Image 1 (cartoon, rainbow, N blue to C red):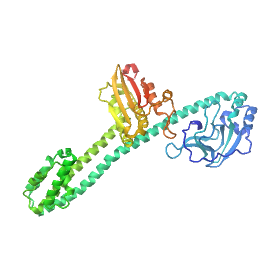
Image 2: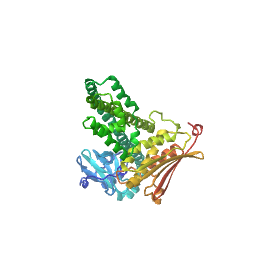
Image 3: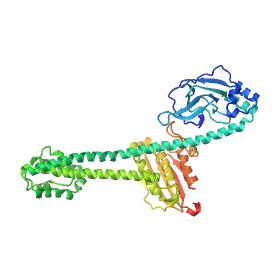
Length: 493
């Protein structure tokens, strides 16, 4: 990556770069740079005569983000780091060593520097003015193809590094979403088992108390028999009916001598037990044993609820893990496989669910139409789905609860169509032709690399021979994917 290709970042320090020193640049210093090593003495002397020396101590600025790109820099000694803040802490985007040529170069369209360049060590560079590029190429024509090759290397390196950054950003977002999704069920499991342990210890003490009060084994069996027959029909009660039943059960528990009856009444009501059930189960008990018996029964019902809650939470964890496996296809090789697109779309939707909830945006799934299987790179397609869904989420986030994203898929004349639709502000028509360009983004600096849609396009069109188009008006933007139902033989796999 070059200085010109670093991602724009909001510089935390706006200190002016170090001024050039009066010391002249010796031609032999430039001859140590590979690009200039074989130049004629008069050529290299002319370049040296028009350079200015900049000497830096560790931490000093060579350039700042936003500074006009008016100079080509030639490394003479030490190391310069160009940094960005896109991943939180500053991350080196480019390291400029002695012998390197950086900054703006001939044929570059860079208008301003987009990174903060600081000396990592004691360093010295020569800077050559952009205004003299035409004369430089006229006097030293052998440099022209070298600058073209250097510019091509920059673009190639920038693409590789930015693609890697995009993957890291996507991984970070995915990890955050997974952590958020796992946190709730894992917390529920921990809390359920902690409470279950407390309840079990208390229930053991109640058994001792019941025996002391003369409760027979038959009575305990009758009480225990209420647990498997208890149902959840009371959960369907409307709030007023439930409140009335709670008041009645609370009053009855109080009448049989149970202290703090309100702490037990909800368990009985939610288990579907009413006063006649409790009266019948405790009819043969001595009055002194009734409170302990009811507490023992309530503890058992509560344990059932706690273990059910833990089981559901564990199932949710398993579903999340399965979604992650389905999304990454980590249990498959990097080969084409028979793919049901709904599986990948469902896995991607599951991993984005928490982010939609956090922003209050509605995510709708319309994937009930059976789809024929096709040969594809499942993991790559899932990456494309994630870029399209994330793009839609960003488009509607400002709408809050009014935001809506719909993911649809259906078969159509030898292709499978996948549509990601949102009701955001839309994409202005002049920009619709540019949104798939690498590094093009309308987001604020630090909130995107401009590669998400380009990556999705390359996965769908280049890797799978499909089509990705956008149709957008205010309130209705649709990214439409068409994938051909191509056979293995046709693909030559």
